[in-house]
Length: 258
Length: 112
Image (cartoon, rainbow over all chains, first blue to last red):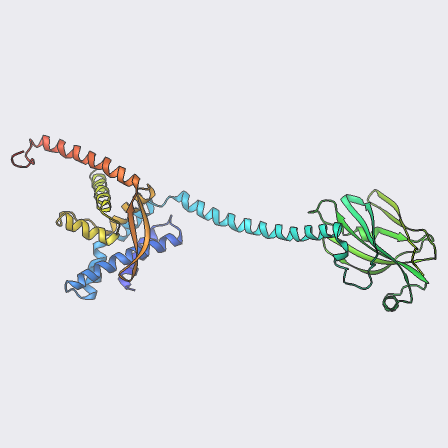
């Protein structure tokens, strides 16, 4: 590329302040092509390359005047709009990312209400497998969904291992309860505090013993081990906090239990 | 006022050139020089603000096309540009007749 042409284009483009960088590049390319064409024609008439380039630049006129004249043809409003559009695109892209993140939680919320067994605990041995459906309205739009309940013998291999790891109390039988919580609004977040204040007990007031837990802001899952005696009719669910009281029962099905 | 007239004339001439076909900038300069038998001389750079103005007014449209191993920016006359050419040609002819009358038909061709 010819240094004279570049210098001329730089002077012109420095005056075209209202153009975007891409438009300035286009201007420089077009002016350079013009001068190159002119210089080639002069060389064909016998001028030296240096003379031809100088004459081609001189024929273009004053670069400052040309730059000012071009600048008047690029409305400032257009530049402002193009910059604003660029900012808007970035903001929308960030919003879209945020929405995708929100959709991820919404998907977890919907899965919890319809297919909780495929949720975060489904692949773990220490979650219950027999489907049940007991739902309780919790505080702040949260729903507590008991979705699986097994009565298990402590002699099972999984529970022996579990007891070794989590100081599970002695007892012949346990109710293994799997439940989840989600917000009524699919885009709402499941409460972080709900599971901590929730109480699941047997008829004698024995507390729960956590088997496993997991989930995210869309839904939270937990499995609990609660000691039960043969024929015990139900478990008791209680919640108290933030001016909200919840009391419910979860029937135990002993049919088929050896 | 004189500068403005010059600019208007250049616009008319460029529109007329583009009526005969799409052209790029340097091609317009050489064609103008050829057709006017070197009567018109303009600083070549002044062509581009005029072309940009015509493009902003949708009288011409530009596009890139490869020619002689180089990607050139060609200009094409639009329908709006064609209408403007007709309007400005009529204005120029009226102006020319007015001048001619003032000069007492001195510029009229012999035998007219």
